[in-house]
Image (cartoon, rainbow, N blue to C red):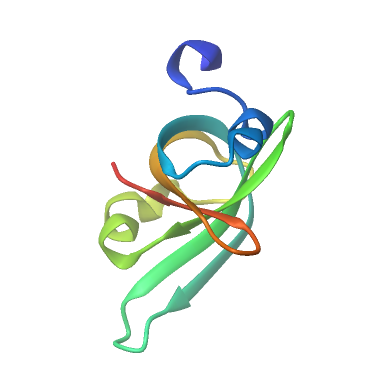
Length: 95
């Protein structure tokens, strides 16, 4: 089922090394919750599949919509924007 709804594996996405939107599924790990300077809550976590992991940053607007879903070992899919940074790949949910 995951193959039908995802854009590919995390490893394949990293190999492609292009910014853009994608759909991925996996398991949440290394969940970290923080507050912005304004006091708004946001989170970051690793999304893992069988091929690797990526760091996902959930900014306050998106965090409000999905806070109850974010827990270690939770499985889910996300649609996100992929940004190629100098030292790492970062993604942020779009829906």
